[in-house]
Length: 363
Image (cartoon, rainbow, N blue to C red; front, top):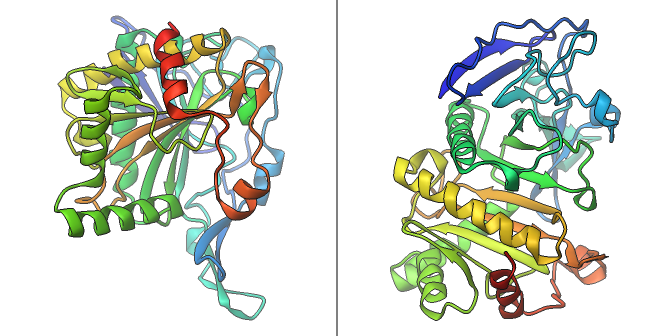
């Protein structure tokens, strides 16, 4: 794979990852007249939950459901420059023009408090947000990628995880993909994102607390025991291979939810071996085909990588991928109503065992 780093007109970084033999050199220039890149965001600590909340008002002007002829993630064409200056590409990553977190305002914004409230600290929204375009084909999807291309994307996720982890203001790296309007996607081109958070996320903090307590009590990783039990009983397993198992978790929150877990405890994507990356690409391709066959339509989903924080809990975390959907039938959505949104108590309308059986039979 060839890696080419360059800059867009406003100074943002763009990185091309080419896996096609003979792909052209990436020398195209961004011809747009863009203002300098200076987004501003901040984070505030909720005194009732002790969780950070990001404030990014500049994102109100981000691109919203453009027609295909003005898609900013397609390759540039004569007279129509986009976010990607080249006329074609394999996989490309660039800094988000409308990021939730960015370091551009970090030096001029000192930590303080909100309106004299000592219990509500505020700080710069330092971090990094990147967009990952999986293919130049606007009408494709991740599930339609070839296995070798999925393998390239795995290497890209690992590359960007390493790069973000080296930034002193990033505490956790989160690669993810949102797919489908039902999820809230505003750009239909096949793409994902990577967030470099300035703090450890609440979900990860809680999972590390549980992992620590379980390790202290049993002397074993909780995910290792979960994985062993799921593989032994088999009723919720969707796909398995030499290095990975995909299963519907026994306490699934979402109407469709699959965890893809490596058989070896690793903290993050860079720690995967070449064989594990190859194996994931093949297995995940099969999992996505099951998901898209479930309702005989493209399934809207979120695919979220749970990785260890950059500097904490790396001996406790067990990296894995969580894929879930809000679609509970072919044409019905699960809404997060009072119990889920207000109290974080989830109520699922289907059993994990039933969903797993349907997914196994869908192909």
